[in-house]
Length: 262
Image 1: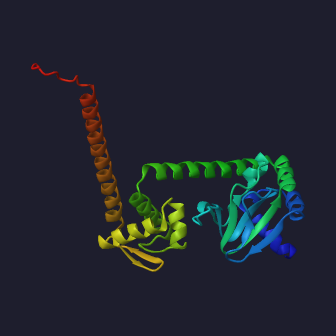
Image 2 (image 1 turned 30 degrees about the horizontal axis):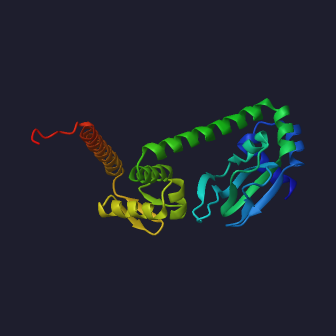
Image 3 (image 1 turned 45 degrees about the horizontal axis):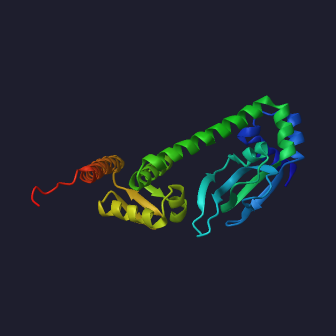
């Protein structure tokens, strides 16, 4: 890579936008450009964490491998994001693997170079802490959604988020459906079933990777109604189970009646 290109790549990254020319010159000697074709691995779970990475363009998935082949996607890394830095501070191996979902360009920053830069620049240290904090908050909100939202709510929330991001009711799924399902903590079959149900209700139209949302307001309203109905059903089931348990307990504790004849 030419000097001009590397200068441009580094200075355009949010993390390095405010470093001094001296720091930039020193950083260039350590940073390595990595190009990955679609489907190639950057590192595996358990590999020694000896560098962090910044994605310039493309899409990277961080996932935990599963013996049944249904790997759990932890996070999708998009251009401008830094990843892998937390493991450097903890001196732990990578707890997930990284794989490119499309042709990608990354900048690799070795551990020693990163720590030296953080010692020299409090601004970059604060920026990195801010980035880690945002990602932690994102994980917490994701866990909250998955624990408190049913499958239909999660699917609708995702469709609404994509529609708002693309600023259109005609949305294109950038990810394969099995990847989206993993992000939502659903099986691919459940995700497809939810889309089919929404299509039957004429709330959406699905054509391969494109989905047309007939009315965002109606879609949101259906998700809310569906959640309320499920909560009511769960409460009724709980009450019925409690009544059954109470009845069985009362029956067990009742004294045996003795006959007055004999």
